[in-house]
Image (cartoon, helix red, strand yellow):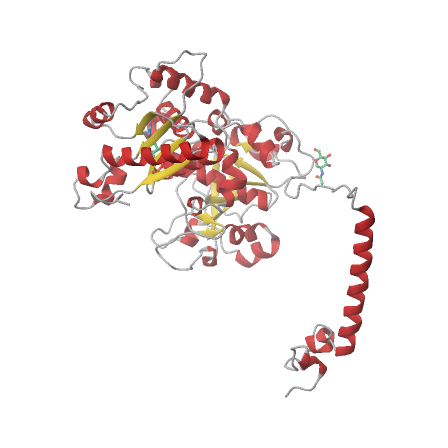
Length: 472
Ligand SMILES: Nc1nc2c(ncn2[C@@H]2O[C@H](COP(=O)(O)OP(=O)(O)O)[C@@H](O)[C@H]2O)c(=O)[nH]1
Ligand SMILES: *[C@@H]1O[C@H](CO)[C@@H](O)[C@H](O)[C@H]1NC(C)=O
Ligand SMILES: [Mg+2]
């Protein structure tokens, strides 16, 4: 039976050996008497608080809102730079501001998510993010790049998140011939076991950045050494941007490609090779409602009004409604069917692997049921968007009475460029009252979240892989 007061309070004497300097932190130091005195004081304080609260209850004191992550003194996003784009990027960095950058190298939606992760990481470390253009991969390497700000309203984004967002073309003159050395962390070398090199990027070619990489610590990986999941946590990476975490992780840098420069990771412009596989809590986190990168950042990637109105023109011509009339409510289907998805079919023939029109029709009916019950609206128009090239597929779509944007007849590529069939399709996927997407497609996923969060609509996915995959 315990007899000391400390034991009665649930403490024991295990830490008697603590040095005197630390003894006051020892729980057993809290004698019963001190506990009673402390409890008395707390009670008194609570009474005073309650009384003052009562006397103020009709006019609560105004709150002072502090924009925690807002880097100081930049209300216009370009104020986060010294001035117009310079020949060498460093000449345009303000000496009172810290920055962050990273690069992309995957399909367009993956790249949107990667920029979202970069911006979120910059927010939580109070740095100004510098993002680059979108680079072509699925649409053909020779298609050229497209600026982020041609797709998304970057001024809106900066205001919405309370932090300036910069593009490389704001920082460094895109026509500059200068090749700037820069020290960056390689997250990729730390989190995956298949390749020894940093993640490939176009940073040299696009921005004239000759990067010397330092491999990140293996502890960046969520499950260190586990070959099937290359995710890292936002805060493990963030730790590298503070002196203590940086010092602890430093190792010899690898030579840059052009100058053979050996540079430790830059402190003013923190940079990382690749931030796609990053999460706060769960791998592939954009799939979950908690996703902070979606909720704090990518939700605010609103299409530019130019792109939105181009897409609305397509919708009106498709539906045969007047140019100055409203677009009727519709449901979009995103059918992802290209070879990078059919490889997952294995031995199952394509026709059995991907969903049939009837499988889509059942999901459309479910979307309509939901909007009827919840919003009192039944979107009758259905639009199919897909990366399928087989004309037989598109014939079947028309047989269902569904609409499709006609990028051939509209001459989209000649009028707007190689990126626009994709961009217009993405806006159409995002602007309906419902999206029926393809399971495991990030393009469906982001479009679906836009439909949910922007339009109050419904997002359902179709499962695929076998003829009965979507049975439910
Ligand atoms: N135009 C057009 N392109 C598509 C469509 N679906 C897929 N693609 C192309 O395929 C790429 C898919 O890669 P990504 O965007 O990363 O999404 P995911 O692979 O589906 O997760 C897109 O970026 C487009 O280039 C579509 O409905 N319309
Ligand atoms: C920072 O830059 C400003 C403006 O160019 C300059 O006046 C100031 O002296 C600089 N401060 C430091 C510490 O270099
Ligand atoms: Mg992809």
